[in-house]
Length: 349
Image (tube, rainbow, N blue to C red; front, side, top):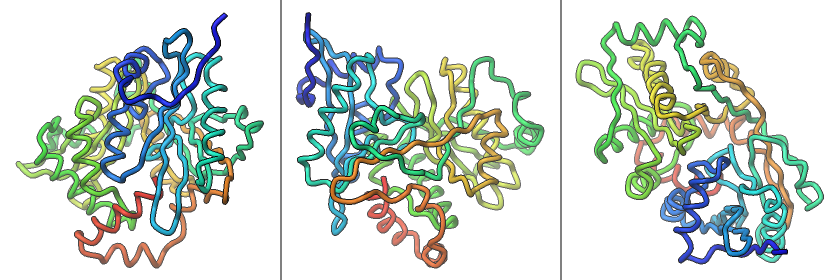
C-alpha cells in the first residue's frame, strides 16, 4: 500500500500541477499558478503550493499565500483576493494531510494568524484549532444551464432590452489600452464609493500572465466608453471580478445590465455552469437584491481562522463604518487614490 506524501511544490513541477488542475473539478481560476504569480508581482506575496502525491502522482493541492505589510506583520490566507475557494482540492483522502502539513508550517512561521475562506462551511477545521469568524459577507451564484433572459426579474429584462434600443453596444476588449481605460473608470467608481481598489500592477499582471483566464467587456455609446466589467473564468465557473458602470450616464443608459447579461451569455455559451456575482456585504441590501434578480442564489462566505499570535478581524468590518475615511477618500485626486489603494488592498486581500 502506498502512503500519501505531502510537500511544498518544487518550482520545476508547475507543469504537473497545471495538468492536475485541468482535471480537477474543484479547481478555479484562482488555483492557477498564473494567478498567484500576478499576486506576487503586484504585492510581493509568496504562495506555497502544498501538494499531495500518491505513487508520484499529484492527487491534491492547497495554495496558501503569505501576506506581509509594514507594521502589520504577516498572515497566511487561503486564498486572498477572492472569497470563494480556499480549502484543499483533489481526492478526499488527500485533503486532511494537506491541511495538517500547512498548519504545522503555519505554527512555525511567525504569522499572526492563518485564515481560510470558502463558500461552504468547513467543520473539519475545528479539530485543527481553527475558529469560525462571522464574515458578514455572502456570495451569489447564477446557474447558467439553459440560461434565458426570462429567468431574470422583470426590471433586469427591461433594462437589458432598453440598453439595446438606446444604442448601447457591449464588446469584448483585448488590448492593454482598453484595459487601462477600464481601470481608470474602475478607480473613479471606487473613489465614488469610498472604497480603495487595486493598483494598476494587478491589471497589468492579469494582461501579461493570465490573459486566457480573464475577459473584459466594455459598454460603448456613440463611440464613447461608458462602463465595463472584468470577469475571470476556469471553464466551469465565471467570476465577476470588478465592474465600473455607476456614472449618471451609464445608469441612465442601463450599461450595467447590458454588460452583465453579455458576460453571463458568453459564459453559458462557453459551457460554464455558474456565474459567480462576487461578494456582497449583508448590509448592502440594494446590491444584493440586484445580483439575486438575475436568478442568483446567495449563501454565506465562511471564514475560519487559526489564531497564532492574534485573532483576525471580521471581513465584513471593512465594509461598514469608516464614514469619515470614506468621505475623505471621495475627495482625493485619482493619483493619490491609486497609490494609497494599492497599499490598502495589499493587506486586506
